[in-house]
Image 1 (spheres, rainbow, N blue to C red):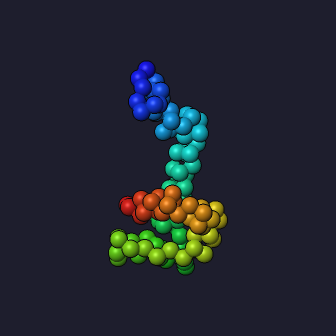
Image 2 (tube, rainbow, N blue to C red):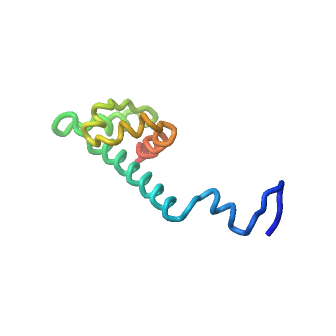
Image 3 (spheres, rainbow, N blue to C red):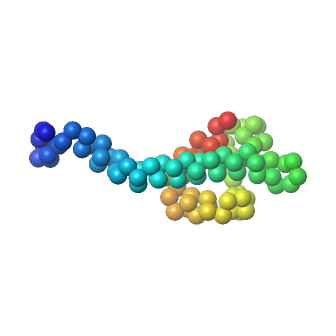
Length: 101
């Protein structure tokens, strides 16, 4: 055990502090992963009309720019727009990552 700036430290204590409890961290990671998979599925499989995939085609034309209508997202997965609105800093990076093929 060491002492640094008035804080008692034990080996591994920093990891527990940063990562939280194992089950809570695993469930948060699992949840973020499932959201990432939903975004990927939406971008790749959303059809505006039969065989018209606007988001996939948009990324082919310009891989650095994508406009998503939240109504389209709502019709595909009803929970995703509320996640984006409530915590954009948490979920926009997942959207960006899901755009990479």
